[in-house]
Length: 160
Image 1: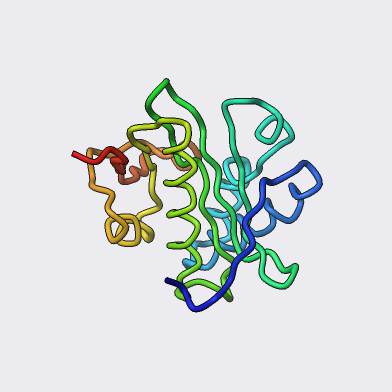
Image 2: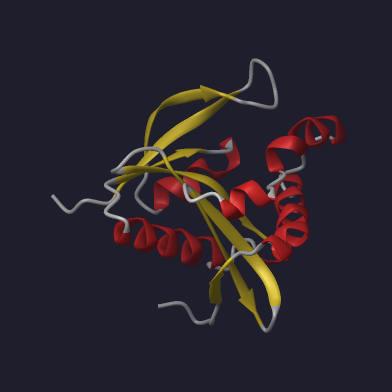
């Protein structure tokens, strides 16, 4: 049980500027170059379509009305979703908020009878996802950076 409280709520279109800023800052935390970050900006920009279309589900975590992090899930099929975003404020990284958010995502996905969540991970986040139960199933090419390959992970939600 975490020693902090984090209020989780569904994101709205009004939250998009803050979510996009946080996604960019969180990615930059890993020390990527400005050219790399510029190339990633489109992939780190979420729109009203992400909030309003039924296949997407975005939730954010706040503490004392301050945005700590957020995640987004996309339905791929009846029993599979993809984690399309999970970002934590740089000042909050390493404090358990990411784990809290991924566990919330797992519970939400289970409500929709999802059996697994696919994750295209930043290489710096692979260990985090492995520590919460995901396992590597391959790699996928980055949408932003040609010839850059990202770990492709799977998180099973079914109890065997």
